[in-house]
Image (cartoon, rainbow, N blue to C red):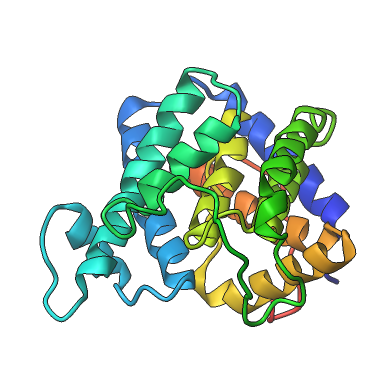
Length: 262
């Protein structure tokens, strides 16, 4: 039987409690896990947007080596995403709150050397997005919309971290405040929220792209966040299981979903 969101969230809380009880974690283990997440998060998030670097090629690019036959933009996207993760780690470690200035800085890193004119700047024109059923907000409304977005975030403290992260991501993507790089920036925001709450990053996998887009579209249209939150919760649970397995820690059986499309 497919696991409900309630079951997933319960399993996440239990797994995180086991992990927290083992802190501080071994430094070499933490370093290896950090390297793993940086690579896989960068690969999958860029692949969702159409970057053709393989996981192995992404690793090579992050090590500073050029891959033949791949575009300069694809190389830059990988290194930019790595730099954006480093920035997230810094603001999380310093306990900085999420502000519009932080949003712009994250986006500036995503588009650095790709579109410097638009990096960190809200769009000054309207856009149409192929696929989703929602139309991004008019560019003239963006200043107020983004101020409202940050204000909502400031009131969302009573939600569970996973639910808050999923809704933060969805609301940002629905606003589509930048000309390009909204998906990458949105997934960085998703993990900013999780990391701030002591969770490992949730990697939305390339192979889950269709289910991810469908869940995101449904949430943007209906305001119903169960689907996207479930997908995020599954990713969080996968990450926690990797931590616990590597550390040899016991955990209860995780709920499984039967639907092969999700």
